[in-house]
Length: 153
Image 1 (cartoon, rainbow, N blue to C red):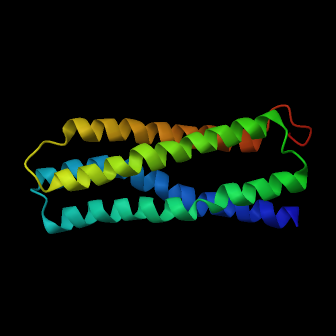
Image 2 (image 1 turned 120 degrees about the vertical axis):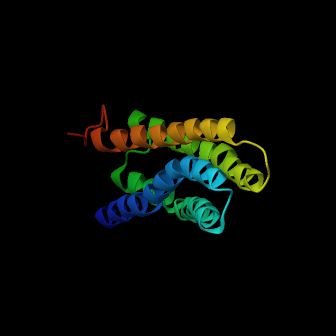
Image 3 (image 1 turned 60 degrees about the vertical axis):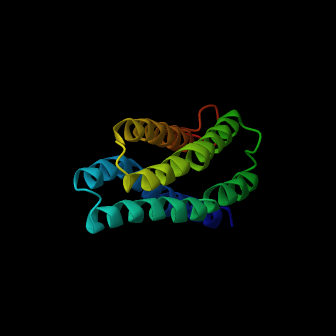
């Protein structure tokens, strides 16, 4: 059963978190292109699609920690330091996404139709997206290396 839970956990991470990291990374540049094009229909549609991908897959991404906890419980590693750090970093990544990245995308979508410049806002959003992606990269490394774990390599 643990192998099944681990497989679902890894698949959920790939299928759910991967698209969010890519779409969120593409979003600021797509907004700048859309503004340069005068927010025409195709460029605006691309920006909306990227935001929708981020929203939908972030909800689907809730499966990652759910199956992660189930897997950790089956492996009896819930108290291991590497897992606790991973949980904290996952919560931080979720917080950055839910409280900063997604609302930032929504603000930029609202501003895109107006005459204001979005350059500073896209730079800030790009930085926040980078923080989100970095947190997930560290969690991924911790999940693979599992420092100090007796089950690690």
